[in-house]
Amino acid sequence: MITLALSKGRIFDETLPLLAAAGITIDEDPEKSRKLILGTSRPELRVVLVRASDVPTYVQYGGADLGVAGKDVLIEHGGEGLFQPLDLRIAKCRMSVAVRDDFDYAAAVRQGSRLRVATKYTLTARQHFADKGVHVDLIKLYGSMELAPLTGLADAIVDLVSTGSTLKANHLVEVERIMDISSRLVVNQAALKLKREPIRRLIDALGAAVSKEVA
Ligand code: ATP
Ligand code: MG
Image (cartoon, rainbow, N blue to C red; front, side, top):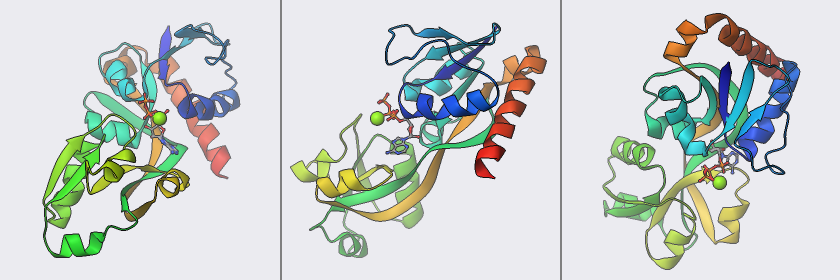
């Protein structure tokens, strides 16, 4: 048996067409069922549903052989024990710094004042500001980062942006783009050795599906 870890929502939705291109369908729609383990059209392949940020952990410890995780999540996890053979080019967005539209970010950075930055992505944020030589106090949040500058909790946030409409709706502006984000296929390194053939076949089929999407 091979186990693939996916998270509900955009990663599940955008992995589905890649699996379909590889001739694999999932037996149930996670939005309609409460099951956490789903069968597929391949008897030897099953899908487990976990939180997006738990995918690397499941794969690292062998709770799943493979998984799909965003680069954002992989950076924060550290990638230990994970083989990352494929950029699936799905769930694309960017990691950015945003502030209130009336906050003079350039001046704050220029003056060398200590910035208060709220984020779920503390490792990425710490690295980004260290590279710029900007002193920051990081405030760890688990969601609704947009609220932090509006309530005075923080001067800036580091968060994922795709269209920018959430920022705009909350009177925030993107002032720096830190990196482009997409989701990758991650594989447990021991499983890659023990179940080499079926895992290789799946990686190759997904790789071919990605190339076809790009072409
Ligand atoms: P959870 O809901 O468990 O707290 P999450 O909010 O990070 O986790 P999703 O919103 O499903 O989970 O996001 C999963 C992944 O999709 C993220 O890790 C990121 O790589 C990508 N992603 C997040 N937000 C966006 C976005 N606005 N546009 C495109 N991709 C995104
Ligand atoms: Mg989310």
